[in-house]
Amino acid sequence: MATSKVTTASFDAEVLKSTTPVLVDFWAEWCGPCRAVGPILEEISDEYGSKIKIVKLNTDEESAIAIKYGITSIPSMYVFVNGEVVKQMVGAKPKPALLKELESFLV
Amino acid sequence: MSEVRNVVIVGSGPAGYTAAIYAARAQLNPIIYEGSVTAGGALMNTTEVENFPGFTDGVMGPDLMDSMRKQAKRFGAELITDDIVEMDLSGDIKILKDGSGNTVKAKSVILATGSAYREIGLVNEKRLSGHGVSWCATCDGFFFRGQTIAVVGGGDSAVEEATFLTRFADKVVLIHRRDSLRASKIMAERAKANPKIEFLWNTEVIDVLGADKVEGLKLRNTIDGTESEQAFTGLFVAIGHIPRSELLIGQITLDNEGYVICEGRSTRTNLAGVFACGDLVDHTYRQAITAAGSGCAAALDAEKFLAH
Image (cartoon, rainbow over all chains, first blue to last red; front, side, top):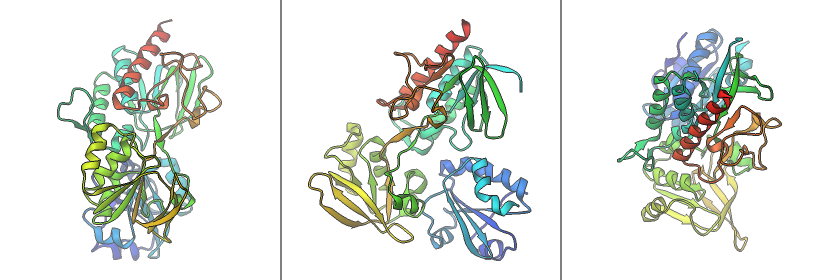
Protein backbone atom coordinates (compact mmCIF):
# COMPACT_ATOMS: atom_id res chain seq x y z
CA MET A 1 0.00 0.00 0.00
CA ALA A 2 1.11 3.56 -0.54
CA THR A 3 2.53 5.60 2.30
CA SER A 4 0.19 8.07 3.93
CA LYS A 5 0.56 11.51 5.37
CA VAL A 6 0.42 11.98 9.12
CA THR A 7 -0.29 15.26 10.89
CA THR A 8 -0.07 16.50 14.46
CA ALA A 9 -3.80 15.86 14.75
CA SER A 10 -3.68 12.30 13.44
CA PHE A 11 -0.37 11.29 15.04
CA ASP A 12 -1.92 9.72 18.11
CA ALA A 13 -4.36 7.50 16.22
CA GLU A 14 -2.14 6.73 13.22
CA VAL A 15 1.16 6.18 15.01
CA LEU A 16 0.96 5.91 18.77
CA LYS A 17 -2.16 3.71 18.85
CA SER A 18 -1.30 1.62 15.81
CA THR A 19 -1.37 -2.13 16.31
CA THR A 20 1.34 -2.69 13.69
CA PRO A 21 4.82 -1.13 13.79
CA VAL A 22 4.91 2.30 12.16
CA LEU A 23 7.84 3.94 10.42
CA VAL A 24 7.52 7.71 10.53
CA ASP A 25 9.52 9.48 7.82
CA PHE A 26 10.31 12.99 9.04
CA TRP A 27 10.93 14.95 5.86
CA ALA A 28 10.56 18.29 4.11
CA GLU A 29 10.20 19.48 0.55
CA TRP A 30 13.49 21.40 0.49
CA CYS A 31 15.59 18.43 1.60
CA GLY A 32 17.35 16.63 -1.26
CA PRO A 33 18.11 13.37 0.56
CA CYS A 34 14.46 13.24 1.71
CA ARG A 35 13.27 13.38 -1.88
CA ALA A 36 15.81 10.69 -2.78
CA VAL A 37 14.65 8.26 -0.11
CA GLY A 38 10.93 8.97 -0.67
CA PRO A 39 10.47 6.57 -3.60
CA ILE A 40 12.38 3.85 -1.72
CA LEU A 41 9.98 4.13 1.21
CA GLU A 42 7.07 3.92 -1.24
CA GLU A 43 8.50 0.65 -2.59
CA ILE A 44 9.01 -0.77 0.88
CA SER A 45 5.48 0.26 1.81
CA ASP A 46 4.14 -1.45 -1.32
CA GLU A 47 6.03 -4.64 -0.56
CA TYR A 48 5.78 -4.84 3.23
CA GLY A 49 2.71 -2.72 4.00
CA SER A 50 1.09 -5.56 5.93
CA LYS A 51 4.07 -5.80 8.31
CA ILE A 52 4.95 -2.17 8.79
CA LYS A 53 2.94 0.97 8.20
CA ILE A 54 4.94 3.81 6.64
CA VAL A 55 3.74 7.35 7.19
CA LYS A 56 5.29 10.68 6.22
CA LEU A 57 5.44 13.65 8.52
CA ASN A 58 6.23 16.99 6.92
CA THR A 59 8.44 18.74 9.48
CA ASP A 60 7.74 22.08 7.86
CA GLU A 61 3.99 21.82 8.37
CA GLU A 62 3.95 19.70 11.52
CA SER A 63 6.82 21.13 13.49
CA ALA A 64 5.23 20.39 16.90
CA ILE A 65 5.75 16.64 16.45
CA ALA A 66 9.24 17.10 15.03
CA ILE A 67 10.18 19.20 18.08
CA LYS A 68 8.59 16.70 20.45
CA TYR A 69 10.82 13.94 19.10
CA GLY A 70 13.90 16.17 18.96
CA ILE A 71 14.34 15.92 15.21
CA THR A 72 17.31 17.98 14.03
CA SER A 73 18.23 16.15 10.85
CA ILE A 74 16.11 14.98 7.97
CA PRO A 75 15.36 12.52 6.68
CA SER A 76 14.95 10.85 10.06
CA MET A 77 13.05 7.59 10.09
CA TYR A 78 11.72 6.46 13.46
CA VAL A 79 9.98 3.16 14.07
CA PHE A 80 7.23 3.18 16.68
CA VAL A 81 5.89 0.06 18.37
CA ASN A 82 3.09 0.43 20.93
CA GLY A 83 3.61 4.16 21.01
CA GLU A 84 7.34 3.95 21.78
CA VAL A 85 10.27 4.80 19.53
CA VAL A 86 12.15 1.52 19.11
CA LYS A 87 14.46 2.48 16.27
CA GLN A 88 15.95 5.69 14.93
CA MET A 89 17.57 6.01 11.53
CA VAL A 90 19.07 9.26 10.31
CA GLY A 91 19.91 10.03 6.69
CA ALA A 92 18.90 8.56 3.34
CA LYS A 93 19.94 4.96 2.82
CA PRO A 94 19.71 2.66 -0.20
CA LYS A 95 16.86 0.16 -0.19
CA PRO A 96 18.91 -2.94 0.74
CA ALA A 97 20.42 -1.07 3.71
CA LEU A 98 16.99 0.13 4.88
CA LEU A 99 15.53 -3.36 4.56
CA LYS A 100 18.37 -4.73 6.63
CA GLU A 101 17.76 -2.12 9.33
CA LEU A 102 14.07 -2.97 9.32
CA GLU A 103 14.61 -6.74 9.15
CA SER A 104 13.15 -7.52 12.54
CA PHE A 105 9.88 -5.74 11.72
CA LEU A 106 9.37 -7.41 8.35
CA VAL A 107 9.29 -11.08 9.32
CA MET B 1 21.56 -10.05 -18.83
CA SER B 2 24.14 -11.23 -21.35
CA GLU B 3 24.30 -8.09 -23.45
CA VAL B 4 27.68 -6.36 -23.21
CA ARG B 5 27.41 -2.57 -23.05
CA ASN B 6 30.02 -0.23 -24.44
CA VAL B 7 30.24 1.84 -21.34
CA VAL B 8 28.81 1.87 -17.85
CA ILE B 9 29.10 5.07 -15.83
CA VAL B 10 29.01 4.74 -12.05
CA GLY B 11 27.98 7.90 -10.23
CA SER B 12 26.06 10.96 -11.23
CA GLY B 13 27.46 14.29 -10.16
CA PRO B 14 28.68 16.76 -12.77
CA ALA B 15 31.39 14.24 -13.75
CA GLY B 16 29.04 11.29 -14.28
CA TYR B 17 26.36 13.24 -16.14
CA THR B 18 28.89 15.00 -18.37
CA ALA B 19 30.48 11.65 -19.20
CA ALA B 20 26.98 10.39 -20.02
CA ILE B 21 26.25 13.37 -22.30
CA TYR B 22 29.49 12.87 -24.22
CA ALA B 23 29.22 9.09 -24.40
CA ALA B 24 25.61 9.31 -25.53
CA ARG B 25 26.48 11.82 -28.25
CA ALA B 26 29.27 9.49 -29.35
CA GLN B 27 26.52 6.88 -29.76
CA LEU B 28 28.06 4.56 -27.22
CA ASN B 29 24.63 3.94 -25.70
CA PRO B 30 25.86 4.51 -22.13
CA ILE B 31 24.10 3.32 -19.03
CA ILE B 32 24.57 5.44 -15.94
CA TYR B 33 24.00 4.25 -12.38
CA GLU B 34 23.03 7.44 -10.64
CA GLY B 35 22.92 6.07 -7.10
CA SER B 36 19.72 5.24 -5.24
CA VAL B 37 19.97 8.04 -2.71
CA THR B 38 22.94 9.97 -4.02
CA ALA B 39 21.69 10.77 -7.54
CA GLY B 40 22.93 14.18 -8.61
CA GLY B 41 25.85 14.03 -6.21
CA ALA B 42 27.13 16.58 -3.75
CA LEU B 43 25.51 19.56 -5.48
CA MET B 44 22.09 18.24 -4.52
CA ASN B 45 22.74 19.48 -0.99
CA THR B 46 23.87 22.96 -1.97
CA THR B 47 21.94 26.09 -2.70
CA GLU B 48 23.12 28.77 -5.08
CA VAL B 49 26.05 27.92 -7.37
CA GLU B 50 27.49 31.26 -8.46
CA ASN B 51 30.61 30.16 -10.29
CA PHE B 52 29.39 27.67 -12.89
CA PRO B 53 30.12 29.39 -16.20
CA GLY B 54 27.14 30.25 -18.34
CA PHE B 55 24.78 31.08 -15.50
CA THR B 56 24.98 34.84 -15.23
CA ASP B 57 22.78 35.05 -12.16
CA GLY B 58 23.82 31.75 -10.59
CA VAL B 59 21.88 28.52 -10.51
CA MET B 60 20.58 26.31 -7.72
CA GLY B 61 22.74 23.18 -7.33
CA PRO B 62 19.82 20.73 -7.65
CA ASP B 63 18.50 22.59 -10.73
CA LEU B 64 21.91 22.42 -12.38
CA MET B 65 22.05 18.69 -11.80
CA ASP B 66 18.52 18.22 -13.06
CA SER B 67 19.47 20.03 -16.27
CA MET B 68 22.56 17.88 -16.77
CA ARG B 69 20.50 14.77 -16.15
CA LYS B 70 17.89 15.79 -18.72
CA GLN B 71 20.62 16.65 -21.20
CA ALA B 72 22.12 13.17 -20.82
CA LYS B 73 18.69 11.63 -21.24
CA ARG B 74 17.95 13.71 -24.32
CA PHE B 75 20.89 12.09 -26.11
CA GLY B 76 19.80 8.61 -25.12
CA ALA B 77 21.80 7.81 -21.99
CA GLU B 78 20.03 5.12 -19.99
CA LEU B 79 19.60 6.39 -16.43
CA ILE B 80 19.27 3.91 -13.57
CA THR B 81 18.51 5.23 -10.08
CA ASP B 82 20.34 2.46 -8.27
CA ASP B 83 23.74 1.79 -6.75
CA ILE B 84 26.53 -0.40 -8.01
CA VAL B 85 27.40 -2.65 -5.09
CA GLU B 86 30.02 -4.95 -6.65
CA MET B 87 32.47 -4.58 -9.49
CA ASP B 88 34.87 -6.94 -11.18
CA LEU B 89 36.92 -4.68 -13.41
CA SER B 90 39.91 -6.90 -14.15
CA GLY B 91 38.85 -8.69 -17.34
CA ASP B 92 38.14 -7.43 -20.85
CA ILE B 93 34.49 -7.62 -19.94
CA LYS B 94 33.73 -5.72 -16.75
CA ILE B 95 31.01 -7.15 -14.55
CA LEU B 96 28.99 -4.92 -12.25
CA LYS B 97 26.15 -5.77 -9.88
CA ASP B 98 23.51 -3.29 -8.80
CA GLY B 99 21.60 -2.90 -5.55
CA SER B 100 18.62 -4.80 -6.95
CA GLY B 101 20.77 -7.82 -7.77
CA ASN B 102 20.99 -7.24 -11.53
CA THR B 103 24.27 -7.75 -13.36
CA VAL B 104 25.52 -5.52 -16.14
CA LYS B 105 28.49 -6.25 -18.37
CA ALA B 106 30.52 -3.67 -20.22
CA LYS B 107 33.65 -3.18 -22.28
CA SER B 108 34.50 -0.01 -20.41
CA VAL B 109 33.60 1.60 -17.11
CA ILE B 110 33.74 5.25 -16.08
CA LEU B 111 34.01 5.70 -12.33
CA ALA B 112 32.49 8.94 -11.04
CA THR B 113 31.41 8.02 -7.52
CA GLY B 114 32.57 11.30 -6.01
CA SER B 115 33.14 11.74 -2.33
CA ALA B 116 31.42 11.43 1.02
CA TYR B 117 31.46 13.76 4.00
CA ARG B 118 34.46 13.48 6.23
CA GLU B 119 33.69 12.96 9.90
CA ILE B 120 35.74 14.43 12.73
CA GLY B 121 35.95 10.91 14.12
CA LEU B 122 34.58 11.48 17.62
CA VAL B 123 32.43 8.85 19.32
CA ASN B 124 29.90 11.45 20.45
CA GLU B 125 29.78 13.01 17.00
CA LYS B 126 28.35 9.75 15.70
CA ARG B 127 26.13 9.17 18.72
CA LEU B 128 24.52 12.61 18.45
CA SER B 129 24.21 12.53 14.68
CA GLY B 130 20.62 13.54 13.99
CA HIS B 131 20.38 15.02 17.49
CA GLY B 132 22.20 18.24 16.78
CA VAL B 133 25.13 16.97 14.74
CA SER B 134 24.53 17.43 11.02
CA TRP B 135 26.35 17.21 7.70
CA CYS B 136 23.73 18.99 5.61
CA ALA B 137 22.95 22.64 6.29
CA THR B 138 20.33 22.86 3.56
CA CYS B 139 18.49 19.86 5.04
CA ASP B 140 18.73 20.68 8.70
CA GLY B 141 19.29 24.43 9.12
CA PHE B 142 15.57 24.94 9.64
CA PHE B 143 15.66 23.05 12.95
CA PHE B 144 18.06 25.55 14.49
CA ARG B 145 15.93 28.64 14.24
CA GLY B 146 16.93 31.23 16.84
CA GLN B 147 19.76 29.08 18.22
CA THR B 148 23.53 29.33 18.59
CA ILE B 149 25.29 26.74 16.49
CA ALA B 150 28.78 25.84 15.38
CA VAL B 151 30.20 25.01 11.98
CA VAL B 152 33.55 23.27 11.91
CA GLY B 153 35.79 23.67 8.87
CA GLY B 154 37.49 26.40 6.87
CA GLY B 155 36.89 25.64 3.22
CA ASP B 156 34.21 26.72 0.78
CA SER B 157 31.63 24.28 2.10
CA ALA B 158 32.09 25.37 5.71
CA VAL B 159 31.78 29.02 4.80
CA GLU B 160 28.81 28.42 2.53
CA GLU B 161 27.07 26.44 5.26
CA ALA B 162 27.81 29.06 7.92
CA THR B 163 26.41 31.79 5.69
CA PHE B 164 23.34 29.75 4.80
CA LEU B 165 22.70 28.86 8.44
CA THR B 166 22.45 32.54 9.44
CA ARG B 167 19.05 32.50 7.78
CA PHE B 168 17.84 30.46 10.73
CA ALA B 169 20.31 30.65 13.61
CA ASP B 170 20.85 33.68 15.84
CA LYS B 171 24.55 33.09 15.89
CA VAL B 172 26.86 30.84 13.91
CA VAL B 173 30.38 30.24 15.17
CA LEU B 174 32.82 29.02 12.55
CA ILE B 175 35.47 26.88 14.20
CA HIS B 176 38.67 26.41 12.25
CA ARG B 177 41.96 24.84 13.25
CA ARG B 178 44.04 27.43 11.40
CA ASP B 179 44.11 31.22 11.56
CA SER B 180 42.73 31.88 8.09
CA LEU B 181 40.14 30.37 5.76
CA ARG B 182 40.85 28.15 2.79
CA ALA B 183 37.58 29.26 1.23
CA SER B 184 37.46 31.48 -1.84
CA LYS B 185 37.99 35.18 -1.11
CA ILE B 186 34.51 36.28 -2.10
CA MET B 187 32.84 33.76 0.19
CA ALA B 188 35.23 34.42 3.06
CA GLU B 189 34.66 38.17 2.83
CA ARG B 190 30.92 37.66 2.75
CA ALA B 191 31.09 35.52 5.88
CA LYS B 192 33.34 38.00 7.69
CA ALA B 193 30.91 40.80 6.89
CA ASN B 194 27.97 38.81 8.24
CA PRO B 195 27.11 40.11 11.73
CA LYS B 196 25.70 36.71 12.76
CA ILE B 197 28.95 34.85 12.07
CA GLU B 198 31.76 34.72 14.60
CA PHE B 199 35.10 33.01 14.12
CA LEU B 200 37.01 30.79 16.49
CA TRP B 201 40.47 30.51 14.98
CA ASN B 202 43.16 27.96 15.83
CA THR B 203 40.57 25.79 17.48
CA GLU B 204 39.60 22.16 17.08
CA VAL B 205 36.59 20.25 18.30
CA ILE B 206 37.69 17.42 20.59
CA ASP B 207 34.31 16.32 21.93
CA VAL B 208 30.60 16.83 21.46
CA LEU B 209 28.75 17.25 24.74
CA GLY B 210 25.18 16.36 25.60
CA ALA B 211 23.20 13.34 26.81
CA ASP B 212 20.40 13.07 24.23
CA LYS B 213 21.13 16.13 22.14
CA VAL B 214 24.00 18.48 21.48
CA GLU B 215 24.49 20.90 24.35
CA GLY B 216 28.01 22.08 23.74
CA LEU B 217 31.46 21.38 22.41
CA LYS B 218 34.76 20.69 24.02
CA LEU B 219 37.40 22.70 22.20
CA ARG B 220 41.17 22.79 22.13
CA ASN B 221 43.33 25.69 21.07
CA THR B 222 45.74 24.36 18.44
CA ILE B 223 48.49 26.80 19.47
CA ASP B 224 48.70 26.59 23.25
CA GLY B 225 46.69 23.40 23.79
CA THR B 226 44.26 24.95 26.26
CA GLU B 227 40.89 23.26 26.46
CA SER B 228 37.53 24.89 26.97
CA GLU B 229 33.83 24.20 26.69
CA GLN B 230 31.26 26.27 24.92
CA ALA B 231 27.48 25.90 24.69
CA PHE B 232 25.95 25.14 21.28
CA THR B 233 22.75 23.39 20.29
CA GLY B 234 23.99 22.31 16.91
CA LEU B 235 27.18 21.27 15.15
CA PHE B 236 27.55 21.24 11.38
CA VAL B 237 30.59 19.32 10.21
CA ALA B 238 32.16 20.60 6.98
CA ILE B 239 35.78 19.49 7.16
CA GLY B 240 36.04 18.11 3.68
CA HIS B 241 35.39 14.87 1.90
CA ILE B 242 36.77 11.41 1.41
CA PRO B 243 36.69 9.69 -1.99
CA ARG B 244 34.06 6.98 -2.35
CA SER B 245 36.46 4.34 -3.56
CA GLU B 246 35.71 1.50 -1.13
CA LEU B 247 34.51 -0.84 -3.89
CA LEU B 248 37.75 -0.30 -5.80
CA ILE B 249 40.19 -1.37 -3.11
CA GLY B 250 42.33 -4.22 -4.38
CA GLN B 251 41.34 -3.66 -8.02
CA ILE B 252 42.27 -0.11 -8.91
CA THR B 253 45.43 1.69 -7.87
CA LEU B 254 44.52 4.26 -5.23
CA ASP B 255 46.76 6.71 -3.45
CA ASN B 256 47.10 6.57 0.31
CA GLU B 257 44.07 8.80 0.82
CA GLY B 258 41.91 6.57 -1.36
CA TYR B 259 41.80 8.68 -4.51
CA VAL B 260 42.05 6.86 -7.83
CA ILE B 261 45.37 7.40 -9.56
CA CYS B 262 45.14 8.22 -13.26
CA GLU B 263 47.83 8.06 -15.87
CA GLY B 264 49.26 11.52 -16.60
CA ARG B 265 46.62 14.01 -17.65
CA SER B 266 44.28 11.26 -18.83
CA THR B 267 41.44 9.59 -16.94
CA ARG B 268 42.93 6.11 -17.51
CA THR B 269 43.32 4.00 -14.38
CA ASN B 270 45.74 1.08 -14.04
CA LEU B 271 43.14 -1.24 -15.60
CA ALA B 272 42.50 -1.15 -19.35
CA GLY B 273 39.01 0.13 -20.10
CA VAL B 274 38.47 1.64 -16.66
CA PHE B 275 38.42 5.43 -16.38
CA ALA B 276 37.91 7.70 -13.41
CA CYS B 277 36.84 11.31 -13.06
CA GLY B 278 35.41 13.95 -10.74
CA ASP B 279 36.02 14.17 -7.00
CA LEU B 280 37.09 10.52 -6.99
CA VAL B 281 40.42 11.55 -8.55
CA ASP B 282 40.68 15.19 -7.57
CA HIS B 283 42.64 16.24 -4.48
CA THR B 284 43.03 19.75 -5.62
CA TYR B 285 40.26 21.56 -7.40
CA ARG B 286 36.99 19.83 -6.44
CA GLN B 287 34.72 22.18 -8.36
CA ALA B 288 31.57 21.39 -10.32
CA ILE B 289 33.20 22.69 -13.47
CA THR B 290 36.44 20.71 -13.06
CA ALA B 291 34.42 17.59 -12.31
CA ALA B 292 32.36 18.16 -15.46
CA GLY B 293 35.57 18.70 -17.43
CA SER B 294 37.07 15.47 -16.22
CA GLY B 295 33.82 13.63 -16.95
CA CYS B 296 34.08 14.85 -20.52
CA ALA B 297 37.69 13.66 -20.68
CA ALA B 298 36.70 10.23 -19.34
CA ALA B 299 34.04 9.80 -22.02
CA LEU B 300 36.51 10.81 -24.74
CA ASP B 301 39.13 8.43 -23.31
CA ALA B 302 36.57 5.62 -23.21
CA GLU B 303 35.50 6.37 -26.78
CA LYS B 304 39.09 6.15 -27.94
CA PHE B 305 39.63 2.93 -26.04
CA LEU B 306 36.53 1.35 -27.58
CA ALA B 307 37.59 2.34 -31.08
CA HIS B 308 40.76 0.24 -30.79
